[in-house]
Figure (cartoon, rainbow, N blue to C red):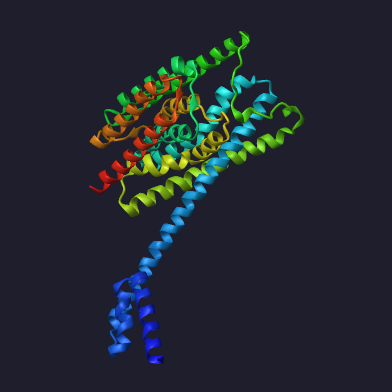
Length: 382
């Protein structure tokens, strides 16, 4: 009975070691039973186990740094927007202008710093992929997921005025990236377009205010009525800490993404479109899903359209103005640009049907995003 029990225990340990460490440890377990000692092979097996363990530890640390980068980017942007918005209103800047400038710049800061740092590291594929992936995810993943929970209303102003600008900006990006390089001149054109769009939005908002129409302000500006009662140094601390958080988060995110791409053999463009872009969009996705579930209007087509305009004209424009980007005129990039353009075009009939994005349309958008992501990894594996 004791012999049978010992055999069963030995068999359990043997099988467990086999599944955890693989074939190389099996010999170390079997050797004592047959009375054969292979010291050289045992040492090689040990070194191989240590190598595998080190690789697992490295990947775990890389994933942890990626997560830390996301957290720093999220809170860095929150603190920067809160501090700078409060300071601007304190000095007499109208809330409408603060919302269209300070808040918009602040919410685009994570994508801007991530793309800028990637370019300086010589990883232009990660940078252009981040912008491409963010714009695709904004429409297909974030807007689609929110509409699945609760249909999203579309204002006529967004449909007739903001959407055409997004479509033109997307087309400009496709044309400028077609030759495989986004030059400083291209960046200047886009930044000029961004300044024109901001000026147009401010003028439109001020005209609506004079006419007595309600102008929707960003959620970030809520609760700033008593800003004069707060000490200025607190706002300045938020700004400084926010900038530091953004810088540190961008560094950790880009560095860990590059390591993951190298370890798994994934092209920089694909890692930028998927891991980096979705990572920077996760806080907005979570907020949008919670808001949709509660029936709040925090998520709107206008937010998505505005974010896409800023990603192209501000992020891509500013980055290429500082450091020209060599993106490569590859077939894969042309396909990804075509997908981004296609998603923007598809959004028009989706919005025009009843001036809302329903659950059916939202489901189709999410399915399209999942299919595109699968295609990217199949393309990489092939």
